[in-house]
Amino acid sequence: MKLNDKTVIITGASSGIGKSLAVEFAKHGANLVLAARQFVTLCEITQDLEKQFKIKAVAVQCDVTIEEDCEHLIKQALLTFGKIDVLVNNAGISMRALFKDADIKVLKTVMDVNFWGTVYCTKYALPEILQTKGSIVGVSSIAGYKGLPGRTGYSASKFAMNGFLDALRVENLKTGIHILTASPGFTASNIRNTALAADGTQQGESTLHEEKMMTADEVAKIIVKGVENRSRTLVMTGQGKLTVFLNKFLPGLLDKLVYNTIAKEKNSLLK
Image: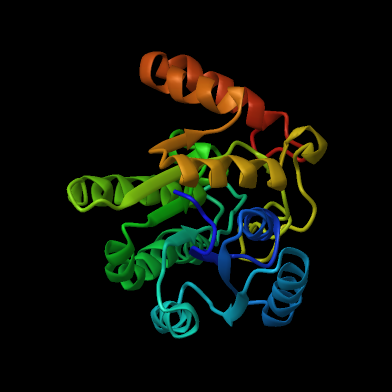
């Protein structure tokens, strides 16, 4: 797919991977519909991108946990550009708490953002993407292939996203649309700072070594290339590829490796 003059919707576009995706799609000449709860920040981003890359961009305030907001997002994209070529379901939130300690509302909140946000936006965008034979992208995670301790709700939401997109891909095998599941490894972004603790408050400081991770810009470049090439799945980083491989063939060994890795976190939950 050539992205010049295509209409691309990106959720969770005010920071992290979403913001980097907006820049990368703009570099390729795409027009953008950027969605997030932080409307003022979104407006600043759209203005900068329009000025820098000579594309058209619109900001839409949207909480993806609210179905009506997602419907409004799609209607606004059509009002502005008349078509939708790519939907990137990027909005996401994480958590950090052992299941035995976590308030159940924490898991529900994570599922509402990561899974139901994807379902709502995809439901309303799908008829338009069928018209353009465009792309639906889910920004998932290696946690969607292997359950991570202390992140039960996050892993559950990404497993659910992967299953949803996989089933949707098969349903649309003969329609000409493209569905991409993109799974970064640990990425340097604010997702861990905003991760929910056991009581639902934000964690604050990251417990991992952010400087050793992929950057959001690197992830965005890989995803945009995946859209251009109409890739099926993207598993990023050597660690991510090894995780998927071991989960198929040596799952018991992988359990131990994952446990030992998470146990090395700052203020580890695993004693």
